[in-house]
Amino acid sequence: MSTMGFDLHDRAVQAIAKQRFSYPDKEKPDWKTWVNTKEEKTMGVKANGNPVYPDIVVTDKENKAIIAGEIETEDTIDEDEAKQWHQYSDLCGTCYVYVPVGCENRTKELIQGEKFSISGIRTYRFDASKVIVTNV
Image 1: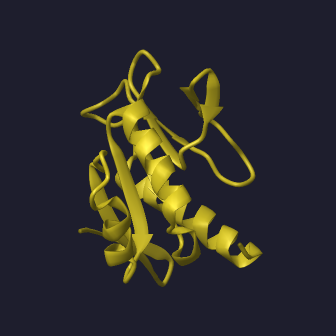
Image 2 (image 1 turned 60 degrees about the vertical axis):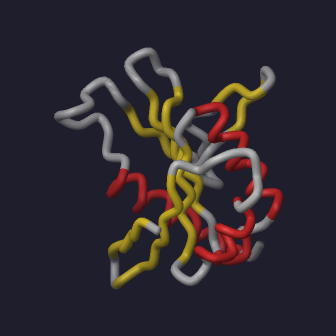
């Protein structure tokens, strides 16, 4: 992937975490949001004794991962990533996949017929300095 792709990815991770997973908040004061970028891994989730790093991890008051968010760019939506979505869904119970607008069909095709479910597919795009997220 190009450096530009990583920049877009990390920018999207930060913006989506802030907009959609701004924990702790009034309703969930014990939850916390962690962001894993190319430069910094802040919260891993144990998988067979080894940590894996979803782009966004939300933990509860016991510091248990309960939500994973995985942000993709146009060139990262493939079967290997779909395997990660499956793993994150199993590990956290809830996993949302965020893809650029126009990539939702390719994402659905990767999930279709698989024996796992994603809690939701969302599309994103940038409008000036903010991210626009839409539920699919």
